[in-house]
Length: 289
Ligand code: NAP
Image 1: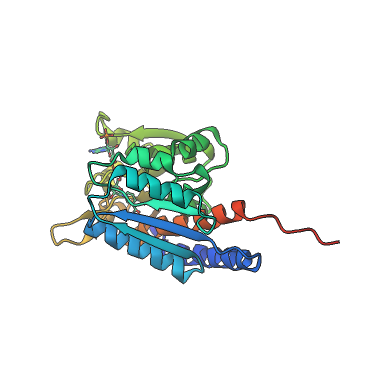
Image 2 (image 1 turned 120 degrees about the vertical axis):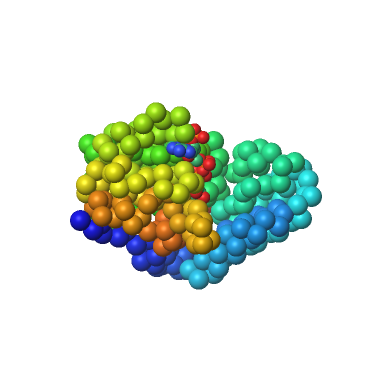
């Protein structure tokens, strides 16, 4: 059996077109959705990520501001910038690129972002909203994975989903989103005794570990959906995921590639959250008689 691909680039194009349409509709009401991206330091990977986010905004009718600061910016000064952005009506979403330099308490900075502008979904208020089913912003990467499952019409109710990884930004919110759709969810991590025994029972597997070949063909039930969040480099320096793609695609029913899978979806969902934040903040249209 050869699995069908879930193409993150193609799905992103569709969703970004919808974002651009929503942004255009807001513009008619006098609102341009705005994202502020804050980068502290010179981490080369972070510089690429923020550039991609700013470009994605420009390509889809969103306004963005990139604030770049040297790595010795004080925590107090960063908190003051976040506060200014919280109060800026042209900014609907605030993203502080992680990691931050070690002298800055990243959690303190995230908690300083107004929950209504927390388009990364990392604030405890956003995590609490996800856990309790209240409106909030969902973290972009697991939200993108949910959109990928939706795109293939996969019904999660009653299915067994296994999430490998329990980070606050991917694994845990992923598990909560799957649970909200009435899947039966198992969360695995580095202390899981026999990972294969867990994954072989799964109808859906989400791998979010950061290690190559964590999931191999013998660990997958025939026909299962496999979502690969991992971003690693192989011996040749090429980008690859956590899943042994060549082996697993012969067993799985659906599979996401790396690159071209979850990666593009993460930025797409950031755009979705930002336009959503702008819609929530926009004054409602005056009713005409
Ligand atoms: P993380 O914070 O390092 O978490 C990794 C998780 O994997 C931890 O929960 C860890 O367990 C678990 N783990 C480690 N070794 C394991 C093993 N052998 N078996 C089972 N579980 C194991 O990483 P993250 O931030 O969640 O990111 C995970 C991966 O996704 C990384 O490759 C990252 O680059 C990638 N990522 C991609 C995107 C994207 O847009 N495509 C976005 C975010 C992250 P413990 O908790 O027990 O340590």
